[in-house]
Length: 89
Image 1 (cartoon, one colour):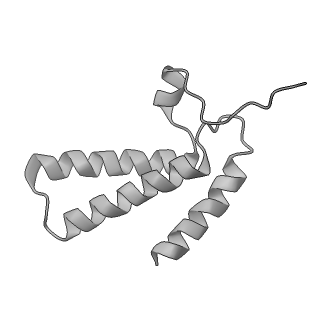
Image 2 (cartoon, rainbow, N blue to C red):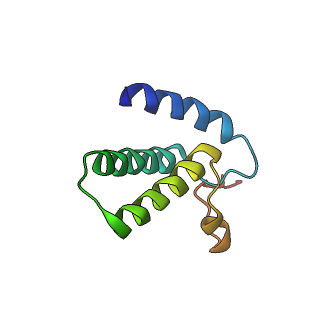
């Protein structure tokens, strides 16, 4: 199932990278989706409770949304661009 999720996300990511607003690479997105999966497993397995669970679930939602859209507002805020610009010779 996780393999299918990574394949699905890579297909979405490749299409979204063409969008001029996207500022995340496929690797960024896959790492965030892996973090979402780990947080979900910890929560479902009952390893996190209370405010820690709420914080981790909030982070997971944010990571999922930014992975799906390919846009991270913090990257834009701090001027971080994950895409390399090609040097013209």
